Image 1: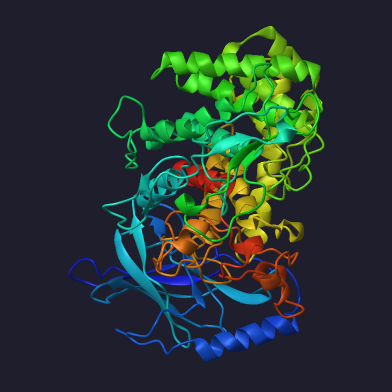
Image 2 (image 1 turned 180 degrees about the horizontal axis):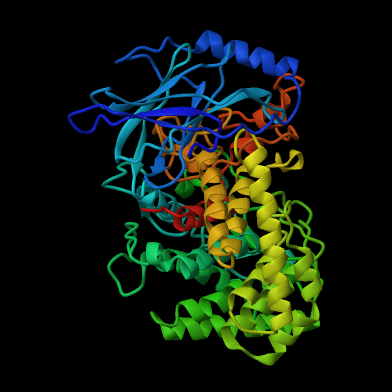
Length: 613
């Protein structure tokens, strides 16, 4: 049955006869608000002018007024496009490619107004179509959509691409994505390193290892913490999809799964940031951001930067390393026991340091202007470290610490508070509950609160015209990662859901993926190289300096940011709705940068969304 209020006729054109099957429709959900703003009306008018006429076999460019997941839809899952035209569309058809045969016809649901984008959109539900193949959707007066695939697992290729993007971010070594991605390569980079005076040391230091954090070439333990932890969790929960994935890295073919090999590249750098006393320096960067040059042409010295006074290391960085190294201690054990033990030893040493230094904050020293990742409260990071150490060791000290502060972890779980680099309390709670043991009352409380929050997230997404859980305050720097982390939250809660609720939570997570891959106000895939209309100009130094038109592939852009935090966004017209505060321009670092912690929940989603048969 259609979920959207659309009336659908499925034309069974795959055999010798065409037989329509009419599907009844439920009543459509009501609009989110009563009337469109003037900005919405002008946007709708622009779409009308831009929309090509729909015709069978049309060679016109795809219309941005018809918004689909440009990568595809799982054959057994619900499927919907969004249409933004005035007057409202009365009919849509789906056509098989390349022959153009009409295989489904239907009526879109009534218009709904979205105040976040200023759009009035209709849902075109084509869930009845499950035959694998390539298709496009056509709408009289609007034109045709970009092509999309229906397949049992349409995201397998993108899962590889997004996972492999981390290889492209490697620091200190030669990188080459060829032969399937020829030209995306560079020689070894950032080979000169040392200690900044703020680190309490004065000597040279190897600068190699780790991942370039974002569009710049810095490396930050705090952001590496949530990025690496999310990826390790993805492997732990969805090893069936990630374990055998060949992502084409130098280590491919060894005894360790490729995804763990790639994560280890960053883990080794994180471990190298631990001092002899167990504390962890905050970051390793140049003093200021370099120009838009390739990695190997950035001649600045990569410096280990500390807090500027004793004990020189920060509590948040130390706790993040403790958490991630503890996860490493359990996941790498089947493949490299010595590395697993080394990781666990580092986690224990970090925990001891935290006992003496629980709240050492970090701020950039004078004359250092690279990313700060400052956080005045490291209590949630300590909770995460305790939960992961307890889960990996079962030792009472760590479990008692977490249970004694479980209220703080519970408070971090909410329907409008997905995890982020500075807010990892929910990760602490989920790790403790996912272990399957521990204090029964604490585990029950975590599971119950997680399911309540997930139910509200899914319900809110169901009410949103774009079928996403975003709230008004979520349109911030990295809003696409906010959306992706809502998806992660839904999938984690799904681990504890009753069978009747698992489908609902999985479908809500899948809708987040559809949004990121083109079913959004820009009709744009926000993952480079994914889909026919993906972003082209990310704020990413390798992409902006390599002489290749298309950017490095598999990277998730930050997305709309209502706060106008760069000159490009400040130049957008007054009154631009928050979900349209985005520009596919290299200079828009506040909406179009990429980052390792944003790609991590994308990988988690691609690995974890259900692909029903």
